[in-house]
Structure formats: structure tokens, C-alpha cells
Amino acid sequence: MSDKLRRGCLWSAALIASQALALGALAQQTDESRPRQSTIDRGIATDMTRKTNTMARTVTPEALAMQAAAISKAEIELGQMAAQKSQDQDVRDFGQRMVRDHKAAGAKLKKIAAQENLKLPDSLDAEHQAVKQKLSDLQGEAFDREYAKEMAKGHDKAVALFEAASQAPQMPGDLKEFAAATLPTLQEHDEMAHSLHEDKQE
Image (cartoon, rainbow, N blue to C red; front, side, top):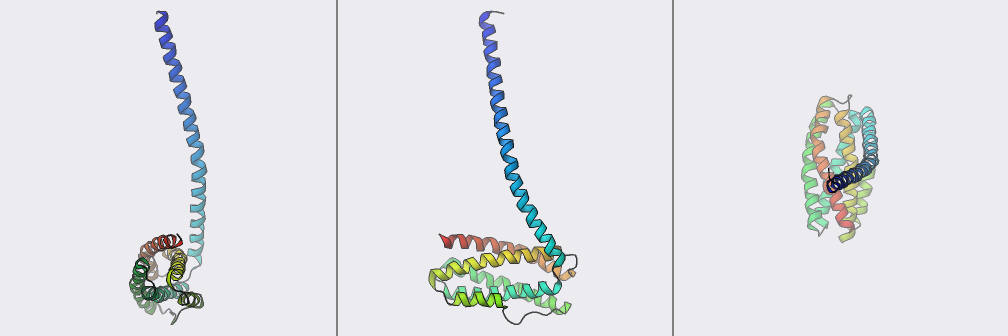
């Protein structure tokens, strides 16, 4: 082999080796960064699953009926308020959507509650009445911001409740099916509410 050819082969081998080292370092960095992120994600997911499982074991048919009815009544009344008071079309549209969807859910729950002999509230509970009073004292952008914040917070709780109820072994079949069937709508509401809340904070 000539010196020129030998030098060329050595140079090629050195180049391949350096590229391999660089790729190895990059792969190591990527591998090192992934566990940190995935560990955080797994931790959050595990914590949420643990909370849902705990609630699923403890939520009763009576508690679900009372809380779900209270949520629907509040969403209807607050949604009507938003549709009437707000000058923001997004807020008005959201309020009208809440009225429509929660009236439908409330009607289904009322029918099931009658079959299961479960009591439903006749009026807003203290928590939602306080929210309604706070919102009734606000106007304009202040109302929009507070309404969006309450919707995001309220739907987080509603989603957690219905997720747990849909998995609760002690829940009667019709209530369990109601929770599972209503959950996707509540999750959509939750996403809409958080988007609206973020928009109103800008």
C-alpha cells in the first residue's frame, strides 16, 4: 500500500472514530435528559392516578348525585349571568354552552336520581352561591376574568369527580354510566375554560 493511500485510510478511520464519539456523546446527552423529563411526567401522572383511585374508593352515589347536581345548577345560573352581563363574545358563547350542556346533564341525572331514590339539591350550595354573589358584583373585564377563573377551577373539580365516579366499584351501574358518558363533555369544558382563563389574563 502506498504512503498516500495509507494516509488516506488513516484519515478516514480517524474521521469515522470522531463522528462515532460525537454521536455517542449526543446520544448520552439525549438519554440523560429524557429520564429527567419522563420522571417528572410519570410523577405527575402517578399522583393524579393515585388521587383518582382514592376518590373512586370513597365517593358514594349520594355524594355524586348531590355534587353533580350542584355543579350543573351553578354552571347554568353562572352561564346565564355570563350571557347577559358580558360584552365579550367568547365569554357569552361559553356561558351559553354551559347552560345548554349542563341542562342536558342535569335532566339525565334527575331521571337516574329518581330511579335510585337519591336526593338532589333544590338550590345552590354555599360555595357556588358565594361565587354567584361575587360575580354579580363585577362588571366588564373584571367580570370576564373572574368568571373564566371560576370556570377553570370548577371544571377541574368536576372532571376529577366524574373520573372517580366512572371508576368507582361501589357506584350503581346507571350512575357509573352517566359519569363515564358525561366525562368527555366536562373535559372539553375544562379545556375551553382554561383557554378562556388564559386569554383573559393577558
